[in-house]
Amino acid sequence: MKVSTVLPLFVSLIVFSACSSDADEEFEVLLPDETQENSENQNDPDALVGDFTAADYALLSASLSLDENLEDYTVELPNFFFDNQLQNEDNTPNTNPVTDMGATLGRVLFYDRRLSANNTISCASCHIQENGFSDPDQFSLGFEGGLTGRNSMGLANARFYENGRFFWDERAASLEEQVLLPIQDEVEMGLTLAEMEEKLQAEDYYQVLFRLTFGDETVTSNRVSLALAQFVRAMVSYQSKYDLGRAQVNDEEANFPNFTASENLGKNLFFSNRTRCSDCHHTNSFVGDAARNNGLDAAFIDLGVGGVTGNNNQVGEFKVNSLRNIALTAPYMHDGRFETLEEVIAHYNNGVQNSPTLDNRLRINNGNVRRLNLTQVEIQGLVDFLETLTDETFVNDEKFADPFIN
Image (cartoon, rainbow, N blue to C red; front, side, top):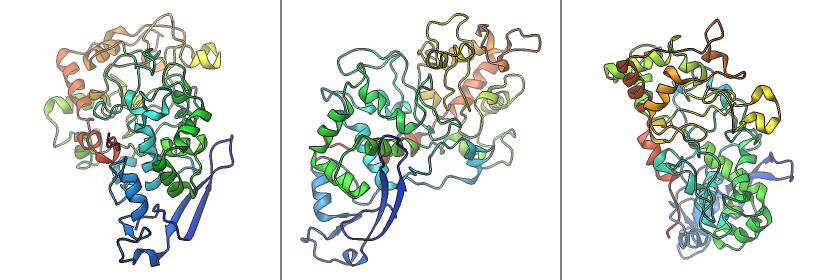
């Protein structure tokens, strides 16, 4: 029986204080009374069906396609994955660790259109699994047909980002804060938190899932935040062609035996001082540590982080997202201006625009903009390398898929 399993009789209770400043929430991991596990009467509503009681599983199965045994959302990552201080990028708070039951509730919430005012949009509407949990459209469609102001970034490895801030302009201080903001956005989903709580409380399956996760049936926005954040942090991509190669060598800069010549060329360029790609996309999560100005414009309409903080030194800075599954997450940049990886590389090759806040890694010693002068063979090598970061297991994993029957 998994640690995160919840049943009506408990013999152990572990309590974590919540991360929200708005409520004194407790995150509970509840263990079952072993005598229930031995029940042989399948007609008994308290008899076990996998990790659930028969009564709970029957109620959930009326709306949801959930396995009777909880999915494993706390997978042990390979040792090499944490090379290069990746653990320092982990933004999981001690108050909200990923658990199987919490992430299961988060999965249901993530795909539930009831979180929008007219039941037409869910989180998954703009973060699609086959697209690396991004949106193939430049801007996402809201609940009344309006468009978002920025492109929806992919969610793979969102758990790893050192300063822990979210959105392109980093206006959310944590993932727990971020997950509630699209629900309240007047373009995206259009609900108040009170309206959301009332809608979810009326659903039988949420009464079961909240009880199993938190110990009682009460739906609160803080609990929604905790569960959604757990589900998103569980989206760790670590089974790509790159990972298979990395596991076979001691040094990431060595040629990978499972790579083509072009893929190894691209990898070597990516980690070289010539391109300095890995300076901004580092660790095995290929993620940044803070927002950067990557030279998209010389003058800015979208001020990025500077528009939130009012700090002129941060104008034009945007979050540096993970490159995991990057070949699936087009279009690229905060405004979706680039349709292909070739266009992205062309930008860094000879299209970077100078401005006062341009990141220093895109300059040379005299202060001028760095030009890479890549050949077509080298550009193709970089594209081929970036495509090795695609994780087909991740984008087809049932535990991250839509659980609703209809």
